[in-house]
Image 1 (tube, helix red, strand yellow):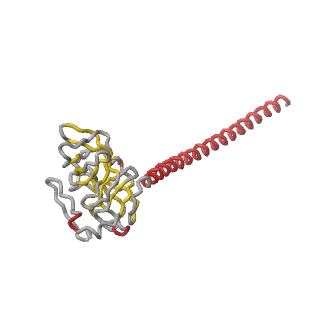
Image 2 (image 1 turned 90 degrees about the vertical axis):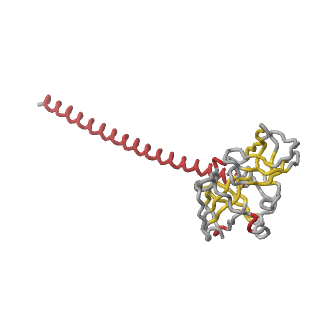
Image 3 (image 1 turned 180 degrees about the horizontal axis):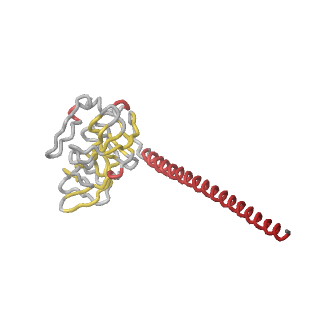
Length: 249
């Protein structure tokens, strides 16, 4: 009888131990799963925080370029490359409703990016300085030589109309020259990158292939210039351009 009871106690104890062990294992598993889920949520928030910090840094970079006396400026996000007739251009999420007009300058904290070529209600097309249609009067900061920076769809625009004996040197800073009245003088543009076979190439300050935000700056020149002083860019060869009159107001 005592032997039977002893065995029964042992069996009961083993069952209780198994139940307690199962409960402990289940609790540990549940806690691990909770910690895993919490860690995943924290990682997600960490990634969001990193993206926001990077975005804030880029936005803060826009204020490094401060025009002397713009009438107003608008920060805009680059939302895509529209393609079509213009090879080097981007679309931004600001338009006429935000005060954007054709001919206004687009810049980053580093320097000039291009100018507004077309405007819709809430979006606009920025013709980049590297586009084949872009022509910008510039000034070489050291030698005070004047030229026209012309895009040719490469990463480095050329300098045209330099004097034959102009003492241009690699690394020389280039700013807008103010001629023609489209841009005021002194906006940073880039530096002389190379001089080869009579061709002077410019490395823009702004990284045109990695634009995310731009400042669209109104220097108050639209009311001064005649309409044909800011013509639409010429279409690339073989391209068809469809212009909506309502967009170009």
